Image (cartoon, rainbow, N blue to C red; front, side):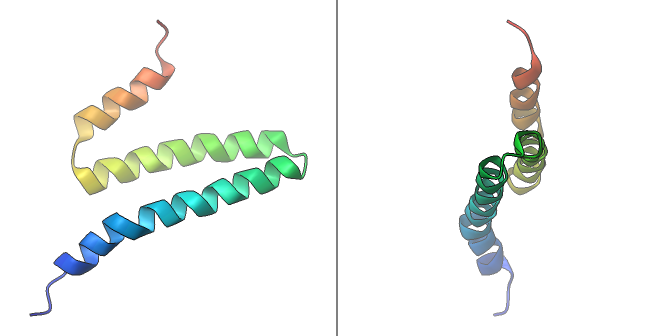
Length: 75
């Protein structure tokens, strides 16, 4: 009766986009204030954080790892 399936689904559906929106607002705010290095640092850290979050939520460690490595590989 009191399972966690509903909560887990709600987190997957709503929390991740809300976190990304809040981070995007913070990055835009830092960029608007003229602190570009802080904005770039936030984007980099956010990208790594979202990649780890995607690995935990989806369980697809191989695919997310390949995508993350693809960002840094040279063609």
